[in-house]
Length: 408
Image (cartoon, rainbow, N blue to C red; front, side, top):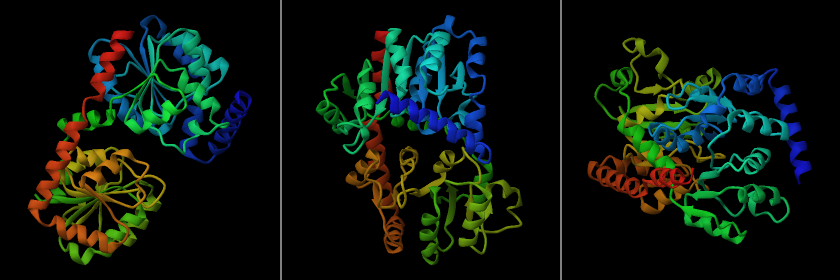
């Protein structure tokens, strides 16, 4: 299995180099790793003995953020690595991380050199992004290793009898695994992985903290003119088309759409669906020239702060391969809906069970939801239920930090 793993890494690097010739994200992935170990050596990190956090991308960073902030505030030095450009490019200047890098591609040589150059006090991996040679070298160096915000489903590779051997071996290398729910713990028990505890999802702590420190958006407030908005978060074409199908019911409602894909091509497609008029966030200074009720957020990083102005939210991805973040609107106590493909997202399942979110399949479902949410009493009751749900779910980060602090 190790041989197949090494071959797959070589193939991955080869494909990334080819794609980098015409794809900007792949180009950043490749170029960001050129000469990286030399840069790390020049930074002389090893003498500082940092805590090393590794995140695949931006979503995993949000799960690690409360711990990064907590350990930084306690005086620990923080080393933060990303696998994906979508994480690194947005958090390379994060204030509570002392060093931020791409993770050099996994190999015996890279892993050995990286561990030697950084000498982390402990390594904290987030959710899924596990790398065999890094974990092996950490174990050989007797450096504590923790996995946080992990969550599992029975169809994942860890639970395949033959194909999952290598992945199970990686899970067994961790000193402790902090899980989001009891179902995950039971699945790991079935493969004799017992060094676990259920503490919940650290993202709850992250979104609650961010909501307490939300930034006002004067230009968005100018667009809203004192009204609350229907917000399409991380929306795809399917969500936009469905909302447009009930536009006659919406009348003069203010609508904020934050597309998952902010490319010019996709935004032009959405504007065609939303005809005759919609306003881009980047053009908001032309507000007096373009009177309309639809604002399209054509940048990354504004959506979370938009939720403070929401009446209710329609979250994207539920008609495709993956539902996007439902905890962010929940942090502002917004009732929400999403498409029918939500079963692999634990927080969405719980929200459906608690009646604080609704899955929709067709425009008539959305219309019925919209009409019910016109009732202020209904919205207020849902908001209180969402607030209670998050308050009951918070605290995972503090539990993990306290336990790790006693062991390092």
